Image (cartoon, rainbow, N blue to C red; front, side):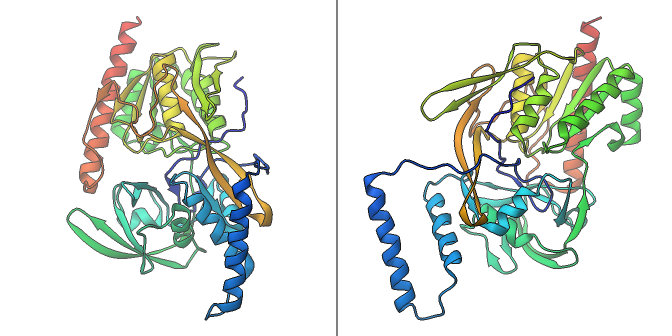
Length: 406
């Protein structure tokens, strides 16, 4: 089986109180090598703290608040949107985010072109009922501007207990408006089958003996649920498989590797991990039952991180066909550090390459067959049309591949 490494893929998109943000943790505390200049830096902080306590006009916050701010600023100075500090409260929420339920409004958010945007409203959640769309820019949260706001801060401001309200100012190409949304407990399925599709499509897939699996996120149980769905589809006589990764923001690296292992022939590469010193490690598929029917993968511009790892592995090492739009382009990996005081940090520690040595960071993976416009800025009916068009084309491509194997 695939090695369980220390590296965790953290998607840029954050699922608000969705149980999807990030991918577990446990890399533990590590001690960095001290440098001569560090002594001057520590002295600077001590002098500042002393001056604040002695001279600051207003009441001085608790020391923990000041040190949280210093830690946050230290990591923000790296200029990496994926590296961030989490205080005790944020880290606790982070650590609980793979449990399959959440308290919030039910949206996936991320940063694109320095703006906080909605990547996906989850169907049936308060955000979906309020009419939020993929591509919506979040300008303000409870009258606080999001300009320059760290992603984790935005998460903390939007989250809250069930029954409480949050007001978002939303910007679209044609208008800007405010919407008040009541938070709730929402349960979600990380893996969905053909039953999530319209009845006519379900009927068509059954007639063509095509299996359909949609992976919503890569949480700690996703590989188990995917394996169960694969076993059902193959037992029912599926001659081909549609794997839908559209708008999947990512999640656990190890889970993505284990799912890829079901498709990739033994000893072939799944991905290459490269650290800052150039050390290269290749994750390869192991033994075990493999999916041997043709596979078509659906992707779009919001397929990110772990979903890109899986899509890239299937494309390069299994010959799967990608249909849809170019993916998000998140090709770096974070390690999670638990810190003194109960906080934690996600620090970018490596990048990854697809099996064919493609560096996708900031670029994404181009589909073999491009279908549909971008979802950003589109009305609901247009989004539905685009997604239906992509699915129809994927079914056509898969039917052709099935016919070629006969």
